[in-house]
Figure 1 (cartoon, rainbow, N blue to C red):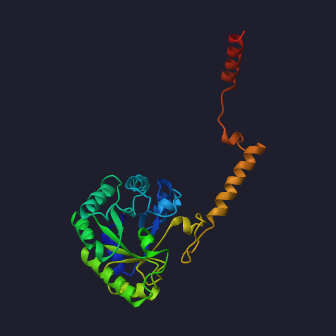
Figure 2: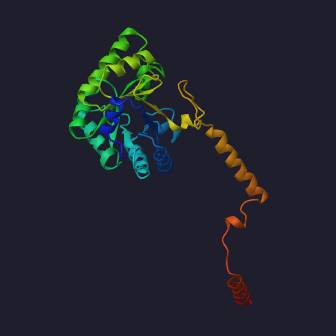
Figure 3: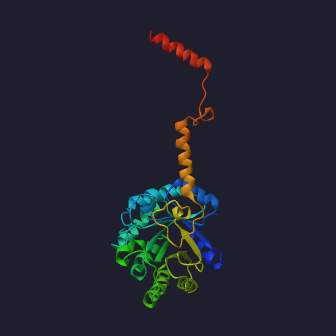
Length: 283
């Protein structure tokens, strides 16, 4: 069944945990769809895990559209949410609406995600009024890494905890259909979840959220540069991939690959005619 913002909201009501993973390409998205994922996030995390940047700040609209289109071609059922990258919406409400529209029209996304609370409620409202669903993102917001001073848990102090709660209520009122809570103390995330009507999706925010999201490279241990403490690695993809790559190299060099099984046949008669013709032509 095709997931929509309506079905995702219903999952909160039904206490049916929402599952979300990042994807950035056709083949990975197709596998996630077949596994039964609810939401695929085309995250600006692609800047780090796909493009090799140090952070998400260098990701462009063209990057997001390119990867969003690839993901959309691979899925049938999941809701596709695509990130608005850094400086694609912060500059003005107009820019926010135009770029959100591009992600829908050109990137074939079903919804967009943006970082920030009260300061972006006007943007959320305008995008929502343009019939584009918006997922909000609070807590640690990677696009604000320079102003936050690093990758720190958000909400440990009373003032910041109050702001997070106020921001969650503000984005709900502005029309967001869901909100990601990243690196938020679990008791605070659970309290926010119980006090707003839209679904919360946690990443490093505990089990009290309505759903969970992970970067798939973290889940599969494919991005060894950084392993956040909140990540559970469900498979050791690094070793699986390295073993396969090394086996390919070894078998190719030793002549074990390819065998006749991996090759195409040709009629002996035609091959002999070719040889005969070639020899005649070279005399």
